[in-house]
Length: 85
Length: 351
View 1 (tube, helix red, strand yellow):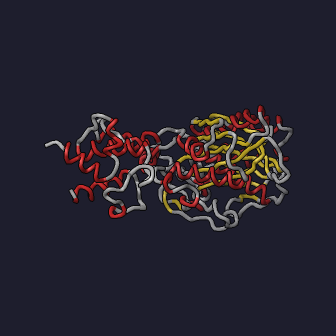
View 2 (view 1 turned 120 degrees about the vertical axis):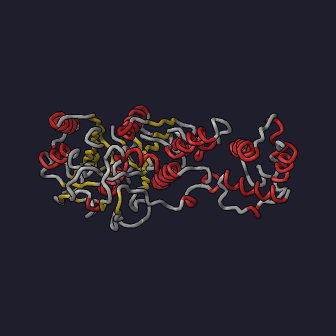
View 3 (view 1 turned 120 degrees about the horizontal axis):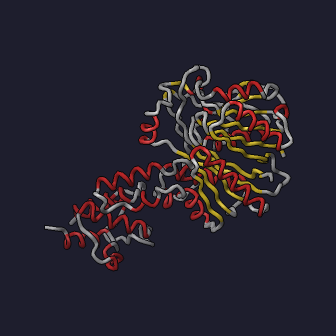
């Protein structure tokens, strides 16, 4: 889980071009949107693509997005629960 | 209908955005292209917004911000942009991702930013400008069409202030493709572009924006009086078009104090512009600029920026001058030529 969260942080920084951040600057439970990292709706789309490209996971129900993309930890938990065998 | 220049911003292969004297230290470059000398964009655009922008968007938005700042304007009434190739880099990224990902899971950012009108839209979004917003993509006449549209707008609403400009970028892919046409020279020192007497030129890029209004203020120095485009003319056609253009504005060739010629250093394609500038403007000062900007479809925007600076300062930098008659700068003509095919005329007057 720890390794997955570190990988995710690195992938998020690269995909969203957050050059001013290092993986260790992003807290596991830190909110990604609005008050936290300040991500927006286009970033949400980039995160959906990231899940598909790196983990082969498609978001079946977009309504679940806000809960899944709440933090790095919530994304990692979603990946763990949904990663193809 | 005269358009008064209220502010300008330019990012080019030269130092055109800082406070240094105009082209006092031109950059020397060996190669077949001239890429922009870029500012620290974080000084002009919020880092949060900046992270998503490609280079051409940063160049365009920043040049626009510089022009607005100089004009002392927060939000213009409209934004008009000319670009021949648009946001090429993002287009390339998007198309490559389509292939790599088998048309699945495409990243939204390069897709959103691959359209020609991204630059004008980004400026509008940043400024919350909900006014008129148009992008012209007429190849090497894109900037001229943007100016014509501005003129139409200002004829109807002269008190408006419009942000008008042009942007084009060099990308690795575009340069590789254009090179196949055998239009660029290898390893030429840009400052020797006009003395080498060879075919081919230098690839260039740049962004320039202007705040234009139909309303004259006491502080205005330069106004844009007329624009004309001439496509693929013979020598006789081009000569007649220039003389009739001047005649329509109540002028003869002798009334032009300075002519800035947009020849590219390509001896084959420069023949007509060379002959006209020497035969018909024998009493005018003459200058050139494409050894400073390179050749690209919207280089006339760089020429307008340079001309307006020269006119406002009443001084032609040494690196621009071909012949100096030391005439007071009252009327200035830009004669641009894009590979000997697209010719444009822009007439400037001192206010």
